[in-house]
Amino acid sequence: MKLWLLLGLLLVHEALEDVAGQHPPKNKRAKEQGENRIKPTNKKAKPKIAKVKDRDSADSTPKSQSIMMQAMDNGRFQKPAATMSLMAGQTVELRCKGSRVEWSYPAYLDTFKDSRFSVKQNERYGQLTLVNATSADTGEFSCWGRLCNAYTCRRDESRTGSTYILFTEKGELFVPSPSYFDVVYLNPDRQAVVPCRVTVVSAKVTLHREFPAKEIPTNGTDIIYDMKRGFVYLQPHSDHQGVVYCKAEAGGKSQISVKYQLLYVEVPSGPPSTTILASSNKVNGGDDISVLCTVLGEPDVEVEFRWIFPGQKDERPVTIQDTWRLIHRGLGHTTRISQSVITIEDFETIDAGYYICTAQNLRGQTTVATTVEFS
Image 1 (cartoon, one colour):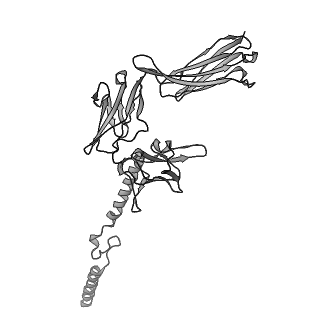
Image 2 (spheres, rainbow, N blue to C red):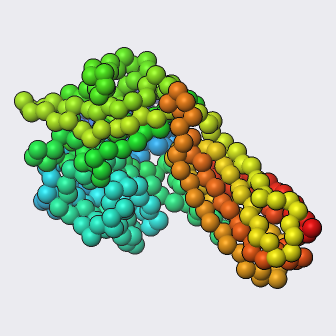
Image 3 (cartoon, one colour):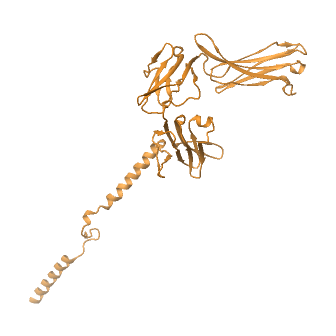
């Protein structure tokens, strides 16, 4: 009996020792010292969330991705501001990322084929360089990438860049004009601009009429001032015509711009309004004949003429002369009259038939015809 009692006590003691020394379950391992301060899950989540946010933002606003950089004097590059003011005489270098890059810049630089200016396409970027800049170079500089397939190329709107640069030059508050007097046409169906652009951001600019002498208010309804364009007539009408000029004031100095003649345009925009008239529709052999093609249009819209005539296949010698002039049609309305006249000397039977004139401008073309018979 005592033996059995001793064996029972021994078994109970061994069971208690096993419970006290047993290992924790596999899914609940013992924590090491300092482990409570480590949060690996949060560390992984933060960069993941930020990455998704950046990607979503880029996808929703692709046009905000500027590809333009400006080269600095220290050899570094930085994104240029939307508007920059630089002193004249400096060198400007702009780069835009991409293997196919196109540029837009002030037309002044193209007009005179300036040797100070160059545009190059490198393997990975386009490069625009302007040396010894002057106030006349003030304007918008922009670039964009091109997407091309086997047949055509188009502008990539998701890869663009632009900056407007004012080149400040001593004694020049206005961007210089190539002439001392300019003409601005007032069309009733589109805005008109008096291009008084300044080279100093802080300049105060006002618009003035020469006669009767007075300042023209810019009330934001009819006329507004845009530093990058000038004075903008939002809804031109005949009362706006006359001679005007601009005045700029900055740093205690003032300057007067060139004068601008504002002319109101009577003819609406569109394809050429064309007529054709022969000096005679029945011509005797050996006589001379002229056929006149006339277009009435906007003063600043050029017109091109093309002729088809009966003796053309036989290489019949003819004389074609194109001319144009401005005419005033009352109430200050101005119209451009463009004419083309074809003249045939010593009329023959091969000259009889249809004389067809096609007049073309940027907005379309018009074809008219008349017949000339052998009498």
